[in-house]
Image (cartoon, rainbow, N blue to C red):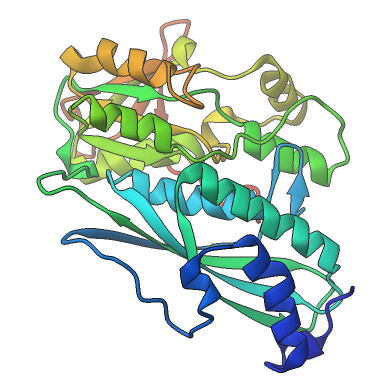
Length: 330
């Protein structure tokens, strides 16, 4: 079945689309009510986030826009220490989209939601003029324990910076797909529930967490450095990049420090808890390649910054990504 403007009319075709694709996959009592608003159980402290996903291509090695939208939403909640609970999704479907592709994406969303322990409780569809593309907007809600306050301004001098794994996989996958380059690289898109919940369960003191998405590691750490008004020193030879991504970057002149990821995070915590945290992360799903990559330092100049010590003893100042980078990566 090809999606037409009639599927966005709010009539019989719309009902068929919702019943046969969305309700069938997002199978829970709340979504089956088919109300315009979901009534759900709450908490005294909630975390909320919203995001939009426009990645091209919508299917790529290691994932698709369906998996990506769940991972991206869940990970944003997790980085504040929240336990993700509920997600809503709005589909903007261009006329000409293939319903079989839509079914695959919705199934991928449903499977990833199960993995992440979240329930998709509400949604919306709109069909617009176009060339068969699919875009998704999400909102996510999670619950935060009393007394837990993970944020960028918590950094302290001496804190260690942990990275949960290799950089650049998602960025390289999307770019290779667009350029029809065949290689072994797959997207790292993954929900980081297991990693975060294990750290919190073991009462590890976490000052800051951030998922390393658009703009890459350099941009994320620069934002944190400026928020906390402290320097962050990185060690070049400790930053993990797979050999396949390293070669891909060499071929195209890319810098892994500015490449987007969709299943990696940084964790900043007191030095005395580093080894415990590393052991926990490495035993968690998607954290086997975790390493310590740097340390928080006193501000040396008027403006806080991130700098990297190179293998030959030099010092390179990092900044946020300048320019567009790779568009529509998520």
